[in-house]
Every structure is written in C-alpha cells, then in structure tokens.
Image 1 (cartoon, protein in one colour):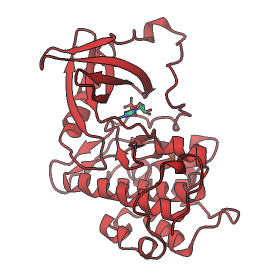
Image 2 (image 1 turned 180 degrees about the horizontal axis):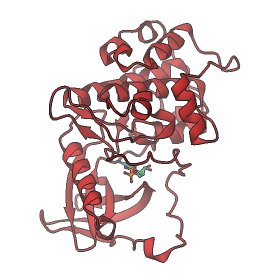
Image 3 (image 1 turned 90 degrees about the vertical axis):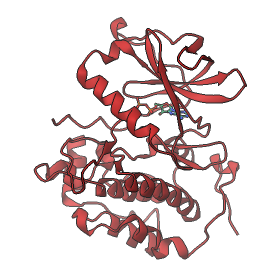
Length: 320
Ligand code: ADP
C-alpha cells in the first residue's frame, strides 16, 4: 500500500525540549524518571531530551553502572492500529539485526504499560544536519571522511538485504569522536527474496530517488540508497540539497527532470562533480555500485584525513 512521503526534513533544534502541543490528546506524557526493564531486571535513569521524530521521542538515559545510552520511546497509545505496530516491529527487527561501526548500535527493547523503549548507542555529536547548519558546507577532505563511513554502512546494510530508504543528513548521527552512525530504521525494508521489488512510496522529498516516485509499477530496490548518497555528497560540498525548491511538487519535478546544477559561487572539484553526476543517474541500473563509488578518484586524489577534529564543529579544519 502506498503511503505519502514524509514532509520535508524538519528544522530540528538539537537538545531542545519538546514543544507544547496544541491538542492535548496527542501530547504524550513524559516517560518515567526511572525506566524499568522488568524483562532483564534493569533500570535506567532518564536524563536529557535529545530529540523527536515522526512517532518517537528520544532521551539520554543512564544505567546503574553509569553508562549512558539513547532511549527511543514510543507510546503504546500511538500503536493502536495494526499498521503502526507492524511498522514498529519491522524497525526493531531490522535494526537489531545490524551490527557495524557506522550504524547506531541497537542494544535492546522492552516495554512497560505505557511505552515501548529501544535502547541505542548514544550519539553525542548530533546529526550531520545540525553540523552542516553550523558549518554551512564542508571541505572536500571532510566530505571524503564522512562519505566513506556512510558508504561503508550502506554496503553493510545492502549485503544484509536491508534498504534504509531514508538516508539523509538528519538520520546520520555523529559520536563524540566525529564518526558517522547511521540511524532511524523506521522506513527500512528487508529484501527477503532475490530480485524482489518494493512498491511503497516513501522517503524524504529532497533525497527520494526518481524510480520511487515515477516508476511505481516496477518498484525500487537497493539503488534508492545509492541515489540518496549522491544527494548527501552534493549537499555536504555545496551546502544545500541539489533539487531543493520551496514546494515539494517543485522538488519532485526537478528530480523527474534530473534538474540540478553546480552553483559557481560554491566551487567543487571536477572529481566531486563527476562522482555526483554518475550517482545521480536517473536509471537505477546505471548508478555505480557502492564499491565503484569508493574506487572513484574523488576519494584517492586529495587529502583523506584519518579523523575529524572536534573543532570542526565550529571552524573549518585544516589538513596536511
Ligand atoms: P523517528 O524514527 O521518530 O523519526 P529518530 O530516530 O529520527 O526518530 O530520532 C529523533 C531524534 O532523536 C533525532 O533527530 C535525534 O535528534 C535524536 N536521536 C535519535 N537517535 C539518537 C541517538 N542514538 N543518539 C542521540 N540522539 C538521537
């Protein structure tokens, strides 16, 4: 069944409290200060609010040993429909099956009378979206560093039959050492039979691949994530997404026409341009594989930093 794509990525503020909602029926009560996992006989102390997405709120929590985690909380009142339950179970099933240094680690899930809880690896660096807002755009050495980690996560997911389907800056987090952690498997799909095609229209307008929107009869597969990595690469070096317009319809039109350019006021190298152009191929079969992407000269010509300094949160780093 086709569900409408999510609205454009929200302007999320890092670590701000949830906004008071107009409709009290939709305002879920805060989870308890002490969250107990009776199944495993563990307790967590709720600390700061970290952020909220379409259906979950995420808090920092501390266990009795003093280790800190992120805890994604979904109220049971939001799980009344079969569709909502199926979606959450799919997210849990897929996320808990993945284990990779550049994917947010799934620790456990449990419930109490009010909520379902997922404990996750804590990403204190915020999202790449937050970082891009502070920095406006990244240098190509930083972009190489981030992209190789994103592509590593992508390759791992695809070899485990998982399509993420919502790869975007707001779902890519950073740990305290500026390493990439891909998160939010809320739209991910498992390919259970080889050659299977997915038909649900989903994703986030700026990052959505053309075949998801315009080849609904044929469906889509792993190449939709490849497309999103092309949009991400463009956004990191240029500072805004390639198909951006005010209206969502305008974005879809530009995606349909493959209408994007490289603004002269934000020069990018010819290697970056060439790689972006090859990834943003309208025909999914013509897009490079993840292996071909990392083998592109963009990654070998020019500095490849061994790590990103924390100072890059505020200022442009220099690399030798
Ligand atoms: P949803 O599935 O409802 O969209 P997300 O998984 O995107 O929820 O999480 C919502 C917000 O919570 C994120 O934008 C981010 O600010 C915060 N968040 C999510 N996971 C983590 C994490 N592992 N560490 C730190 N913050 C997180």
